[in-house]
Length: 289
Ligand code: SAM
Image (cartoon, rainbow, N blue to C red):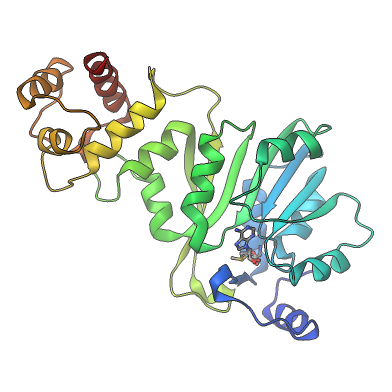
């Protein structure tokens, strides 16, 4: 079974009388080469378990099942579940779960379904409208995942991959790079989807870190400081922090602390590495306590 061509995708949709829903981000990938690139990036073995979010009509699911021990695919659209079950009938290592990935308890899913796997990966062509909340949920919940390979909107991918000192660098970059090591897999033009989306996409791989890259005393405070540093992008670090920190602090004292850890108060938040954000949040935490 192969869905590498758009005619097959169209035929399936017609057969089951399914009109795609834009509101569910239903842009189906129809390029066999791109499907292959995504599957290869996950670097699967017969010990791997895979959680696929949004299988659609199973274009990725088939290849994932061939390369892994087990695939559990989470699909929100109930119209697609019988189609998927029919497509994978007799394939005991593929299981469909009708659920909203935003509400699903992934820790429970992993412990229920992947006991016999030595590692678990998430692989998905994510619906655009939920990309960030799903990635945030997967990354911050401390799940025992090895990697997340996702196709997402190109601009969001660029923000995740961005290095300090670039325009795309922001709190999402720090967040993603704190929990994982993101790398680009391949850029994907919009014409390989049915229907064609308005935007270009990119496949990225987030190799999950099992230990933070920098010592952070209070993770939630660290991210508050990161957000405050980027809150006013045109302002200096000092001004952005002094107007957006989650607790009151005299500007003079804030300046002293920024200088104390060797940073320039007149620089911008986008110049700071994750290491600098960690130092900054650790000294500010002492001040708050
Ligand atoms: N994997 C298929 C492919 O690559 O062609 C389909 C990808 S399509 C971009 C996104 C899929 O996610 C759709 O099948 C859509 O119904 C499903 N979806 C949308 N929101 C979802 C959610 N919150 N939880 C689970 N699946 C969702």
